[in-house]
Length: 379
Image (tube, rainbow, N blue to C red; front, side, top):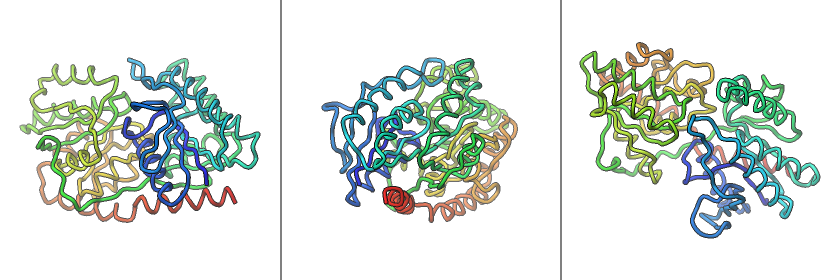
């Protein structure tokens, strides 16, 4: 098959969960003999068309920052990407086009071409369905975004979801997911040194935007200090809220304990910081899946997350068995972190159970399911 993945960023330039999932599926499908293209902004040096690990990357437009300084997703980069996707698809034909949501405008552009080509099968993969969150995220402009999302949910084609949580929220938009295909993980037995020899008691990994809720972790660290602990915290990731949260750390006198490491260059570095940490803190109030929780589990690192209705990662954590899932308050979150840090037996039990739970969730399974779904659509 000749397959096109459509999204507005690409791995490893951007290391979010959507980007990682698309990249892992793409390179593995290419390894199985399919011709796979990524229709993404041009975010690498050199030609707009390059090949990497058998995958053809097509830079359909110039790369622009996805987020405004407010932490909200910017509209202009999404529009420019959609126009680039439209131009390329008008010139070239694919057997199957798989569009990733939240790239709503690019999905509409791709569908406008695919509807005139019955032989080109159209798939929409939902990583998140925002619905009411649009207004909370973007204010008045969110009403427009909500209408666009509802329009995308009504498009003909195969709609799939990456988690049961996302499938449920998609159903709220009136669209039933035809399949739920979660991402995978590949635990490695190779020992990888932590970043720069660093060791952390608490690890945070994520884009520094409001929904990742890093402020809750910072407040919780302050509460831990008041309890007599001095945990070392490593924050991995970057984004428009970095300066705001660095200021919060400074105001609360926590700069000696909380390090902002920025983005990591390689997956081996991520493995290193995971293995060099005692617990992963995931205070996010909106996740379509929460891949970092799965990756932490695969390496035996227990996760403390929050029981928020839009946080799909809470479904990856069995409270008291593979991790802790608590209300999103400073008192509850700090108490959960303190329990894992102070009780070695609890931490070891949670970590081992988490490792076993992640054992069956592999990329091979995800690729098998994706390939079977594609073949059924094309046939």
